[in-house]
Image (tube, rainbow, N blue to C red; front, side, top):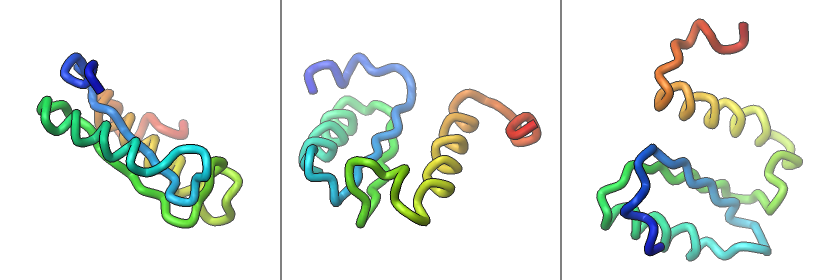
Length: 84
């Protein structure tokens, strides 16, 4: 949390709400610290998914698409270069 002001690049925080290893409050505290430091970030909450979201039916494709979109936006990669 103390390092939040040092963040220079956009961050994607993803939290699986059915995760029994990490409590959602941890991600929310980090998001609050980033907001207080005026640092760019996005929060993606994944209801009904546990620690292994990629093994949750119906989640994998959308999650990968969201991650790719985030990276494309923040790295400046045009749509046409993805999946080629």
